Length: 56
Image 1 (cartoon, rainbow, N blue to C red):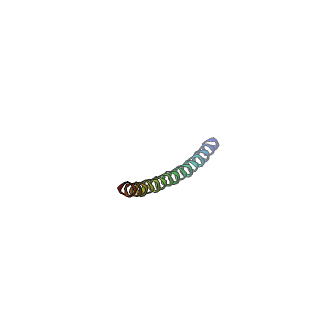
Image 2: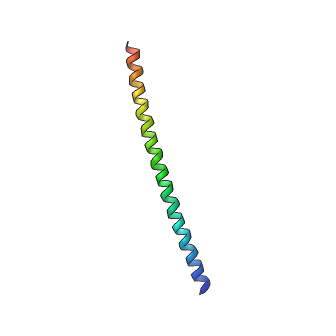
Image 3: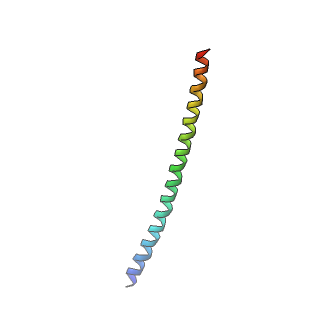
């Protein structure tokens, strides 16, 4: 019985750690998405400027 309680406590700790890691991964992914949007917007602006220069 004691070993089952110990195993359950370890399992709960592991699950809590997995939740923490998953949350960190999600924040990282959201950061990557935001960075990608920023880069894409910059690319569009650069393309517009280059097009204006080419038109002159």
